[in-house]
Image 1 (cartoon, rainbow, N blue to C red):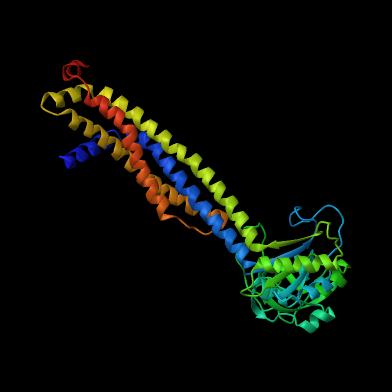
Image 2: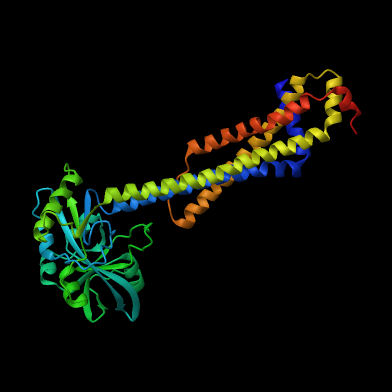
Length: 402
């Protein structure tokens, strides 16, 4: 009997194709929106976590500036960090490596080609701390770093723009007013969620950049790698204590520097993306309710249109329960069809969104299953009232209906 009810429901659905399509459209939009939003949101979260992880494990970042002012520091003038600060930090028992960093920008010229890019000045530890590798050549040596030698390592984008697919090791490029000998090429890295091409850069010894490009001994930031087995919180306290001594900060005075834990930044960004994903998914979920209301309205119209048919069925022996089941199954079939179509459309939109945003496509099977089940529940909830109304029709009055 139940199988026959499903068969009749399918016949009714496909007999009125346009009406059925318009009925399930709300369910399709709701399910597709939820799946697409969650998929893109989870992909964004995974990308953020990957970007922060690419900065290095157990990594702290020290910058000048009053706490609470963010990575850019305070607008109030404070003493800049120096190479001596980096050397002192390297002596701490909780620290395994330190890399002072300065940044500049300009135009690189080679083989008659100009390319605007950024320069990062640091020492040989930066590659280890950040987890970067070389695809060609070598890193500059400690001796070259101490001497401020004009050597450089190119990012993959700079290599491609200036030298194509060739090996530039040993070649000379001109940057601003200085000539620089290429000693290596950084391995290509994935695009960053933070809105920058991490392959579009040139790495030079920090003293070279300070003397030849920016004309200052200031250090913009210091990356600090914490030893394995030591909490970053413990290392952070040691660093803050040392820096307060070096910068002669009184017991009652606030710090004029910031120590950022990359894990905390990851947690913050992940929390933000999760909240946004939840809000967008909740808004998308409203479409499911709207779709359910649409099913109820169409089913009520269907009951009115098929009043005479219902009367005939009841006159030849159909019970109220059988009529109720017939209309309820029709509503469930419409919802399930909408749920299936919504899953297909949602996964397609999620894939397209992930591709457009250059993030990982990470569909969640639990969300897909939950959306499908919820679409069926919507059919039951919003299909029950029209089905009950059909079951309670008076057979005599139904047969008289024109």
